[in-house]
Image 1 (cartoon, rainbow, N blue to C red):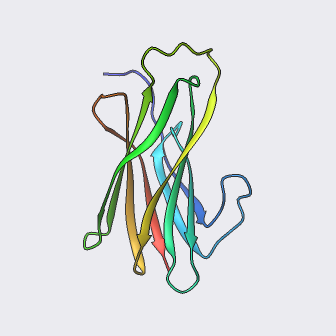
Image 2 (image 1 turned 90 degrees about the vertical axis):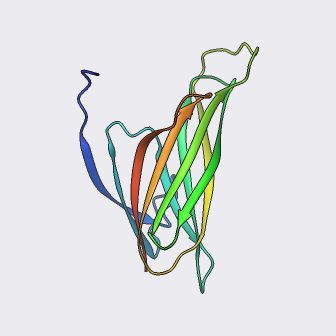
Length: 141
């Protein structure tokens, strides 16, 4: 068991806010996670009549030999839950300087009816098991 202390955080995040500008949008989300959160999360809605929802996950990787990708998105519309699986992989045989590399990936959630959706992010390195690292409550209005 780890001796690291964890803190549960509940913070408001405005959907439609970009990672850089933080400009508000028409929808909201709540972030629930353990500090420090492994990802910076950006939520956007695109389209005017029925918006399509996108989640942007950003984090620093240890060097340019690493890449990150969304492996799978499971969306249960009836239960209003979304699970996003993300993997960071090191390219085999590549020697790279230890330089922090900001990286981001985008997952399209698609069209959503009004309501609250639990969005969970599972993460793994290489071929390890996925672990739940963050959860968001998305409120689509």
